[in-house]
Image (cartoon, rainbow over all chains, first blue to last red; front, side):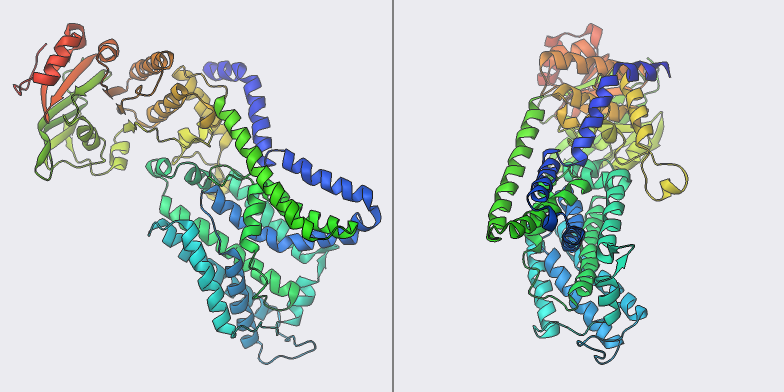
Length: 350
Length: 256
């Protein structure tokens, strides 16, 4: 005990530094948080009525919800030094299997607008199908990465093509439009205490994921695998099992995002997710998660998801051609990685 | 020095194709000593360490712990018997905190429901890590500092502290100071003495003869897969060690 006191007394300001280090890790390096904050302030000041309106802010959150759920999965994968290019295609595949299952369960299209009158039972079954479809692709990715030792970039590029191809084979390339009316009206357009249901789902996923990544053994192992896979193996971590679990998590979250997408757009969106993988990767990297693994945070990813959405929204409101958003995003992404590397080099120099 | 070896290897043979890496080698470590294992390149040092830490299996021969014959079939068996290895390439995760590295694979969990849900007890891990570093006089800014922010010597110290936390009998170290500067080497050697003073035997592979004479209590010399000499360090010189390494006979036993 005396020894302990001696060290804590000696390391008092060290402890404070650790707190600051942890904080900077949590908000992905701080400056990116300030960037988002600055963007919001600028747009709010320039167009308070339009940008700052509760309607606009709500729409921003709804637009972010689906991409956020995908990016959370991507955060776990990248923190473990992997990459998942298949998230968008897995979303499309899961939405197709889920929509077809719900259509089959509720019989022929009924009601208006081509929706069906499937009840909550049908919707729950559809959710289960979506989650299992997503987790299945994740398991395939994980097994190929962990056991066949094929680079994740290639594995998930292959499963991207396969998942998208199967989705088109299953539908003949035509979106399934007949989805349960209840799903669209209650989940897709519904609110809980004024907050859109989709935003609530994304918020819950985010909070649970942050707790799992930063406070549990699984989260520690994610970082350990990303930091030094061989050291993790020698430490007795079941490396292959962990890798499979990480990809299954990413796939299952893509399945959940598929359900959210059906609820929001009341159709499968076969052609609409080609850029999701790059959007999620750039959100994760913007948020301070290292592409080389071992470092990352969920809070950073949340900020990384919102920056392009706020930027696009602000440009539209200000009347700047929205094409500038992609230009700005590209520059911000390169800047983010550059600053990250400068900080790392500075730290390695001591 | 007690008379029963803590760990003893008798007549170990290990063949790779037509080559005997170990050809009837004997080896012994006694409790509470630093034992240097030396030999020219290809003498079989690394193979012997691998076998004694459970990473490889001998074709023939017996391994005894405290006089009792045992079967070392995997590194985890060796770990359960209180044997740990500090690898030359540092098996640490650089981005993780020093304290997280100390407990990686054997994390301390919260009690009750939270623990079953997989929640870590980081506070306890930090405290126990600080305690372990203090016990071994390893000075870090804080146990929460990521390993990548540490110097080479500090990293090696964390790796050794980790081994000392999980091994209560023997730690094998393969060239622990090979990549370090003079000051850092001195600090790591101090740490090795500290580990010994905790009652853990240390087996050290080194090519640095003056260092061997400085730190080891005893030296065992391998040549062409056999033990050719054993020295009490007090009675040894660099010349006698080098002679034994390069032209020792397999007379097998003691040149003291």
